[in-house]
Length: 181
Image 1 (cartoon, rainbow, N blue to C red):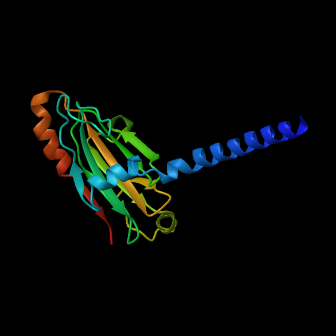
Image 2 (cartoon, rainbow, N blue to C red; image 1 turned 90 degrees about the vertical axis):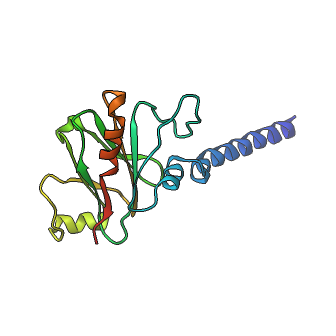
Image 3 (tube, one colour; image 1 turned 180 degrees about the vertical axis):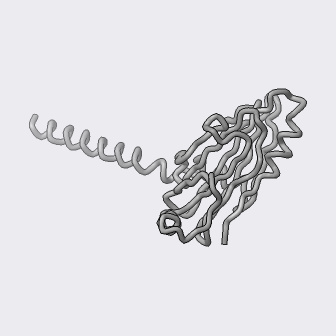
């Protein structure tokens, strides 16, 4: 009887360990995460405006079809990144993702930025140089420390009327997405 209990307890412990290992390692092994999906859409230093999602069309990113989306991927090895340009007075938002797929910064036009997006993305060593005033930056620049050398910014615009979508799409396409060298 004690031998049976020993093997049953051993099986439960082993099963629990395997379960924990799978739960901990699975997110890192996933190839369909937010980072992989977004980086497949946007080459480095290029702002890509995502096509509209039609009715009954596949929506693998789970996007809201009423919004317009722009994706900007930056590699900060050679210098800080900039995402900037004028935006409409209607609702807009920006979210910055790290390679783990986590949002590390988010803001909207309601945070006081108004109709201008001027955001700088810095890795930790560039942030240190910024604190030592070794970078010239514009006044009012939103400073985002990415924690690493890669980041993706997703900009969302909400056109107040369907007839304004093309104009908003052009505004979104006109945003700067580049690395300062």
